[in-house]
Length: 251
Image (cartoon, rainbow, N blue to C red; front, side, top):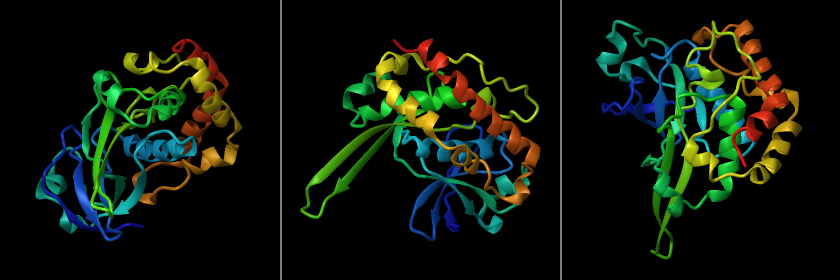
């Protein structure tokens, strides 16, 4: 498990008060705290969504449980009245420098073939809070051994806390056949023919592969077995309705 060596003081935009941290495996990560300000399940949901996205090669940021010594935290996080952070296990996502994605950025991205998987990731997990934000333009400039420079621009999906349509689904009635609307700028870029191979991949996943994405998390997070079963069954059953959801969005 990665251990933080430094938590940078500047809070990233948003209500989660996420911070960037250095870790002992030399990976820079964005740290999402638990307990989360958006409700009990949101940190757990982001972790599981990242794992599921990697199963279908969707353009998502990679998340992992990380250890952060509370002594490294800014005082404002450990003393905040609503949900003070006192336990050491959180979720860290590989830091991806970039900016909010805009429709005019489609002309510059280099991972256009990943767009169908992004659409299916959003529709399958019924990820809410995607209206006009939470798609991201990942920008990276690398200096190669021959001293030439390579620039990359990738479309990625970030902030997947609101799976099942809610930031906190613990007390929600989850219905796998719930309709879903993809971001308008994305659905006009993906056809149902484009999505078909990814959909077949989703349908071919073994049940245990899917369950494994939800089954590993810190004991102190308060995610009880009945919640794990609830969300896992939702994701498994939603596969049966995924083609209908996509047909209502894509041409």
